[in-house]
Every structure is written in C-alpha cells, then in structure tokens.
Image 1: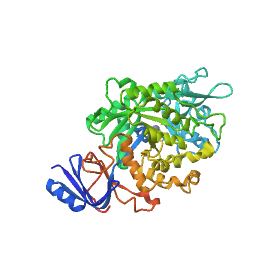
Image 2: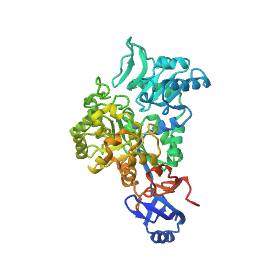
Image 3: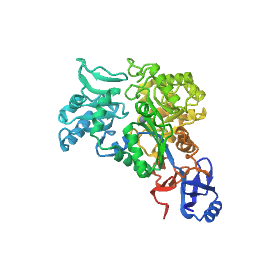
Image 4: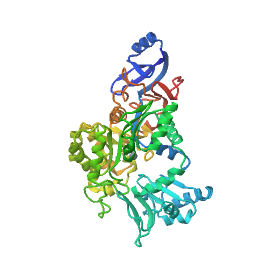
Length: 525
Ligand SMILES: [Zn+2]
C-alpha cells in the first residue's frame, strides 16, 4: 500500500503521547507504540522512516490570517514599516523607494505605528508629498485598518475636501477641512480598488504565502476576508494541484452575497473549501476605532464606532444563518462584542459562530460567549505588539487578551496570527502565549495569570483551531482515521527553555499525507 510510518520519534496527538504513526494514502492508520506501528507498517507494506528522536505534532492551523495579504506583504512590492521609529525615517524610506521606481508607480507599505514615532503624531499626506510627489503612496498602519496616502493617491481615488465620510469609514481632515491623508476603515475602499487593478496577480501572492506557511509547520489556514478574486485564484491553484496546504475560506460579506445562491457552504475543490463569512464590526485599538463601552482612556472624545449599524448587522447575520454559512465576526472592543452576542441570541440557530480577536472581554461577555458557544479566535502575538494598550484602556486592560480565563471558562480558544499583521510563525506565536511578554510589556504585570502552558498553546493551535474552522473530524489531532496533516520538529517544545521555543526548527511538514516541506530522511535532527 502507498504510505509510510514514522518511528523513533515522540508523537503528541497532542493530548496523548505515542512513539510512532503510520500513514496510508492521506490518512493516519495507526498511532501507538513503536512496536504497534512497525507491525501495521509491515502488514501494509509501508516504508519506514527513522526520525532519530524528532517530535511529531498535528500540523498547526492558523485559523485567522490573510493569505493573499501575506503574499503581497512578502513580495518586494510592499515596504515593511514595522521597525520605523520616526516620521523622518518613514520619509527617508519612501524617498529611497521613489528614487528607484518609475514615476506614477505605487509605493505601498505596511506596518507603521504612530505610537512608535518620536514625533508622536500621525504622518500626513504633506509629509509624503515632500519626498514622493510623483508616485502615489499608500502606507498602511500596523493594524491594516488605517492608512496614510499622499496627495497624488487622494487624487487618483477621487477623494477631495468635498468627499463625505462613507458609512463605517472616516477621512481625517485638518482645521480647514482638507483631508490630511489619514484614511480609516471603509473610506479606504476606493484606494484599494485602484491598487488591486495594478497589483500583481493573486495566484502568485497566495502561493508565496502558502510556501512560507508550510515551511513554518502550518498545514491549514482560515483565510479570512477573501474576496472573489482571491477565491478564484485559490480554486485555480487547487485545480492545478499546486497549493501545498489546506485552506478554509471566510469570504467578505459582499463576496458571500455574490456567490451564496450558486455555491453551497463547505463547497470544496481538493484542499480549498468555503467555510463562512467574515464580517467587520469594528476597527482596532491602536487606531482608536475599536468600539468600546466607555471612551478611550487616552482620548475621551471617542469610544470608536461600529462599522455596520446594529440593524444592518442583524440582517447580515440572519442571511448568513439562513444559508448555513459560518459567521466570523471581527469584534475587538467590548461594545462590538456585546452587540454581536446580543444579535446572535436574538437570531438563535447559527452555524458555530466565531468571534475574531475578542480583545476586550469583561466577565459578563465571557459568560455570554460560553452560553452561546461562541469560538474566540485570538492572536497571542498581539500581546507583544500592543505595548501601548494600557494607555488606551486604563483599568480595563485587565480584561484584555484573557486566553487563560477563556480556557478555564470552557471556551474553545483557537489560535491564529492575523498575518501579515503579526508574524505567521507558529512557534513565535506560541512563545508569545506562554511568556505573555514577561519583562517586555506592561500588560504582563496586570494579567500575569493569563500565561498559557505549552500544552494549552499547542491544543489551541491544533484542536482549538480545527474546531474554529469546523474541521475537527478531519484534522487538528493525530488519531486513526484523521487526515495526515503533520509537522515534524527537531526539538520537543515541552523540553526546551521557553526562550528557545522560537529556535525550534521545522524538519518536515506533511499535508494530506504528502511531504510539502523538508524531508523525512533525517540525519541528525
Ligand atoms: Zn484579520
């Protein structure tokens, strides 16, 4: 029979510990002691690989990330602005890019954070005009919900002082009413639509992201905010059988509306399937656009706004529920979460509702989430990146990123990275969850009890994420009958110092029984 067995290794299922695993075609046929696995391998005529003491886990499932977005960010096309510490430095980077790009070509970047800038202010169109007047410039903030553009980009997008703020979006203006170049949320749409026409195609971006992910041990992703173009690219790649990992798509609501009458939920082509709908309900804490119950501690004039009106959200969720698709609602602020939960309660039956981020969760909302069986899809690395969170929330910071409390409450926590917002590396993400930025961020001191154990982190990345993506009968655990989605690591996460977690290497990644990264012919792990 076609297949192989892995022996001389430690297998974490992840709940149980074994000595080997046998794979036939794309399924696990045996997991057990070395003798049991060898016996099955002999009986079925499977090839045997000696893993020389390596560690075998279910592949990591990144339940919320942006596949094409990650691909675009990996291309040289997008400038990485995450380590920029002043507007002066930002300008220098844009100037350099402008000097080597033909006039008229877009300069695109991502990752700036005004909190890091020495100037302690947002960059403006005029900053960018100084260094790149002849290139349209579009630089996304770290959260991806806010961007700064220059005057040429505003012109191309048709945004002037007379353009009203669209529902769920904002064009920042100065005292004279002139757009400052800071564009928020849905107001970014006209800019995206021009860039997308010019950007390289989705297939390349998706593939580039997928190859990076499998090299990091990710075997499946929840690809959120997928639009029709990305979905088509995914199906084209699946048809050609070149996509190395499993993809569950969560379409944007507008894309769902376009296809809901022609494609049923869970429609699949090879390793790509349709899982649900992503709905954006609020913004980010960083940009003070997340919708809070009380005003921001560092700006009493605002508590954020929901991107969609409550009645509108209810209609959307009703439609999603009627079609049986799974809702994945982005709710960062406590008021956004409260609104979502209230509507879920009113609607009744919904296909395993997810809440994306669930950043601020006071006790009453945690209780409500448990009652409604809502799956929190969280991003542990936010703990490290959102170093300013106490400024934004004050006292309420004690309700932020309560992963341990969620697990203790019986919520089925799923891990993810929101890449390219955060690094896509699972071991870096697990490191963030188990250290919680101890010695690095102030949030740790306020919520020290929220550190997870290695076991909890591994389970959230496998079992938890498979539940969030409704794949628990197929992957997320290594057991007889499950799909062979597996990662082989050179060291045991339970046995290394926490500081060394990030140095663990992926030796091989197996998806659907196929080795899609690395090798099983190991010399010294
Ligand atoms: Zn996201």
